[in-house]
Image (tube, rainbow, N blue to C red; front, side, top):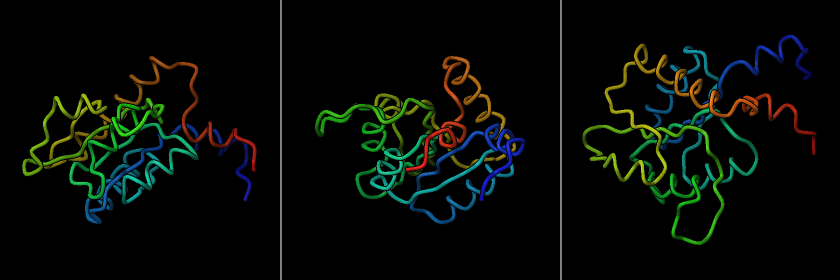
Length: 161
């Protein structure tokens, strides 16, 4: 299905957020809440899936669950930012990444920032409070990267393979 040019512009105007969590409840809460808050959303359930997704496309914002299983959230952040000590790798993204945590995760803010998190969201999360904050984070990032298209506009511009 081809999107008409006028609708394509509307689609590209919404930031696209990637939600990374293996917690079904958190995924549904964030994906649905962000959608109603003006974001397009995609979600993946593991760090490895996230790394693979970033081989194919980019996003305007990434939210990573601090309780992520497998390699874990901090190692995922390091790999996305090219800071992992597990082999030399280039950064996969420079878009804002937020670590989503709660009191029980015991997230170390300094360790999260060193791994590559731009901010930490601590539960309980109130969508009415975080949606404007997330839009501001994306706007601030875009202001420092004025030549970069929104993620969905960049994906639409890529030729079909």
